[in-house]
Amino acid sequence: MSAQTNPLIDDGLIEFLLYDVLNAESLCELEGYEHHSRETFDLFLDSVRRLARHDLLPTYKPMDEELPEFRDGRIVTHPSLPHLWRKMVEVGVLTGTRPEAVGGQQIPMLVHMMATAYLMAANLSAYGYIGLTLGAAHLIEAFGSDEVKERFMAPMYEGEWTGTMALTEPHAGSSLADITTTAAPTEDGYYLIKGSKIFISGADHDVTENVVNLALARIEGAPSGTKGISLFAVPRLRPENGELVSNDVTVAGLIHKIGWRGLPSLALEFGDVGDCRGWLVGEPHQGLRYMFQMMNEARIMIGVNGAATASAAYHEARTYALERKQGRRLGDRGADQVPIVEHADVRRMLLRQKAIVEGSFALLGTAARYADVANRGPESERERAHLLLDLLTPIAKTFPAERGFEANALAIQVHGGYGYTSEYLPEAYMRDQKLNTLHEGTSGIQSMDLLGRKVVAKGGAPLRALAEEIALAVTEARAAGCDAELCDAVEQATDRVVSITMELGQRGMAGDTDGMLGHSWDYLDMMATLVVAWQWLRMAAAARTRFKDEPTQQARLHGTEAAAQYWIRTEVPRISVLAELCRTAEDSYLKAQPDWF
Image (cartoon, rainbow, N blue to C red; front, top):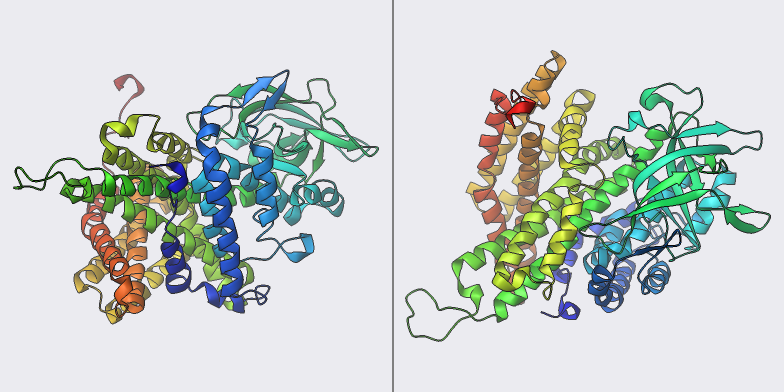
């Protein structure tokens, strides 16, 4: 299948999710969204998907093959990137969700997320510059002084500069309490920054003239641990007397990645000659709290990347299976060869990909809708939406990445021997996908965040809210005439998850940390399986309501019901096994000693 013919994402799916499952039009009733309508949403979606298919997709394979280079201390990227950057800025994805006061369109997060998924599916490296810049500029918008906003946020939102986050150090990855980068105050209002950062995506390039690193550092004399971390804007070039001059930010090395090859990952040195200047964002010692805004936004973005990459590979596999003739139907000896989609195992692999991809988009859309309500909904609904968003964020990051990798592997399997060749795209998509399980915190870290913080917050209020949302979906599915056995299965699984969560929470309160968190990965797997079952039940109910009397939509109706049945009957039974592992605190790896491996 030619890359240019890949639809990337099913347009009908996005329309169905937005308007039939997630009721995007009702967001126009929220404060700040009143000037929007389905018409403006569709115009934005159409323009972005055209850009994805016509401009970004043709550059994906060349960008994967022609890697960034480190020349004379600078990074040289693929020559198509400056053009793609300008096109993406012009179409409005950089400031689409931001307020009109800073040049934005105030598009709901839900609509913006669904639109930008096309760009990620087409060329995730190219979109990465947008996602990082948006996150960095929004961080300054939320916490920076007027001076810092004018100096750094404005040129980023205008598309003149890009932005990135600079957290990780060679000795401190997810353990941010251990960072050693320092910030010395000066009488001129800026700080002198000194330290090393690593794995910093997009920190140097030739796409725009400047990059602003949102960096964590410790002010001299600050408390140890996370309480002493502050946030600084550290540009590669600093404005000085109307010019941009070197800010003593040096590229120490280019890291070669298996995927996301168009977005360079770099090692940086701040202050080699003692003149790296950083401007404090917000209050001292609040840097980690501020940075969580960008990290949470980035976690959702990684989830969307996971769903989008799995979707692009799924559509490659689907088209290949429909066109590739190989073998004959069982029992049809001597008959003509048939397309491989006629073989049961190929249909199994395609349906599993569909269940993962479309379930992921529904999950991410649900999280984005909660973000919209949490930010702009009625005061009476904001806290509940915020609790649900917090609970879903580690799942929305992890499920599309972990299960998306499985879906990508299935896309290769559908292609058979052609699948592992570089002449076909699935092998590249799978390389890209693997990075999503590592970016913005590994899956294990997400699982500890989910179980150790999110579900037990405020006395378990997020979990109760989730159980209520699932119960409502079950009621609506029964009313729509969905299979009663599927409704029963989701209902029973919810009870099981709530019960085991309460038991694990009690262990934690009693001081049994291993007993609570030892199986946090199994807990996340269990919770994600339930949450996606909830999404499939919602989609099945919406499809029956929307399509049952439309003759031209019967394939979509039956496809949705088949995927819902598949997920709930094949995956939901695993919840009992995972819950039992958590309950018994099965100790095979907990008791294993280092010299056993």
